[in-house]
Amino acid sequence: MTTAAHGGTRHGKTHRPLDRSARVFVAGGRGLVGSAVWRHLVREGFTDVVGPGSAHLDLRERRAVFDWFAATRPDVVVLAAARVGGIKANATRPAEFLSDNLRIQVNVLDAALEQGVERLLFLGSSCIYPKFADQPVREEALLTGALEPTNDAYAIAKIAGITQVRAVRRQYGLPWICAMPTNLYGPGDNFHPEHSHVLPSLIRRFHEARETGARRVVNWGTGTPRREFLHVDDLARACLHLLEHYDEDGPVNVGTGTDITVWEAAELVAEVVGYEGAIEWDTAQPDGTPRKLLDVSRLTALGWVPRIGLREGLAETYAWYVAHLGSGVLRH
Image (cartoon, rainbow, N blue to C red; front, side, top):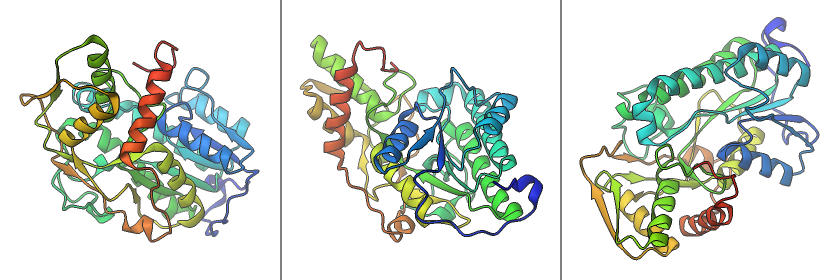
């Protein structure tokens, strides 16, 4: 494998489809997104998928990351590792979200460049877009307005990752790409009461209320913000599809193209869980961005569409949650 950092600019075309015997490093392979990508790659016939857990490789430690890349020499990298969390975690621990994500990204991207990794997919987040961007949000909205204050540190880190990938494309000619997923959920999610995203948080809250016989559940905010939700297995399919069909400078949105209010999401989760009590809202708590619907026309033009409906996906996710209660697998 040619080392791009030492070998100057290269302008090779993407090989489609990817060689199923290629060594694919899924960074963050134990997390919600990484584990879904790993499962999909194996289903699609990839025979050499690698990715040590954080106990064996801390991606924040630069020397360890460079040594691992030198020893393992992956052909393809999917950078799904990140410190993630819901609105409360982002708002109360912004320094950690900025520092950890910057270090993870810079270390992995720099090490991949040193080893001349030909194909790399960096996964960002829809929070990179301005708080009041026109809806649905097109990829061109990036850096055109102010961010949502409750998660600006995380967003800035992800914007830095996008910028680094684009810089590598310009300077070294490597076909690295970026994808921006919308709000994700699915088996393997984080159900922590303070650090989780909206859907797993609702699943846990309504399940516990049903089990204890609670007569009401109080959720943060007004319930009026609109959110788009994508099953993580659909994202995994999109990742491989992009690696095999996309080689352009700009990021690509990944979502369903439809949204609902958080209130409607809560009612749907309550129905799936079987909770029949009252649903109330603590309007003293923040709502976050009022609406965040992605324009997914760039991705659908490449021939990809989501397959898993929200009700179906929530039922699967809840079944996974119940099956793993008390197992030590749940991050809660």
